[in-house]
Length: 203
Image (cartoon, rainbow, N blue to C red; front, side):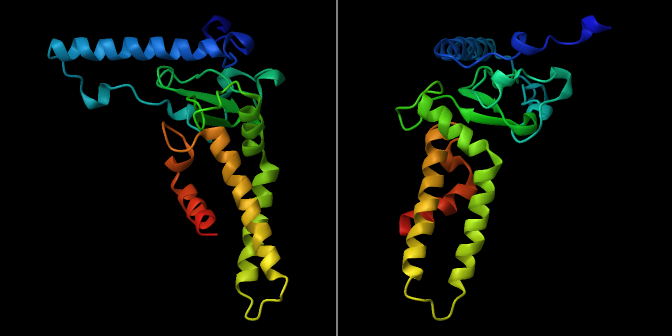
């Protein structure tokens, strides 16, 4: 029975390294060649037979128990894709608290930061941590409370600048970790970030 279980630990989880991009490119090229062959031979594949993302490996879900607990050194760090659907795509995953899956674009963020860049890894760790998220939520609520004041005090302008600075820092972390708009799972691919971008731009 044990032979039916997939291997765990370092045999399943692999750090995302510079040569990981080459592997992705090779898989992508093989996938395109296969599609080209089908097109030349007029082979049509039914929509239900096309490859689809694994529902249990979606971003935001916990890692399925069948993979076991990843070693601590594989948490909060870029890893190669586990989902076969994305293994030929320019993506990588990060496992956060509770083995939650986060998926990121593997192309250069801002045309500068590779997935192996220390600055990008630091931005990813800030982004997926729960405390910054809670801090931003408190900041938004506090900002809403200040906006309801009929006669704001003189120092409220300084508070507005502080809020804008916090939102700018949050957006910068997201852009450094995800990339801005080119590719999947980037900053502007999430509609929630459109509002952030508009608010910061107008501020």
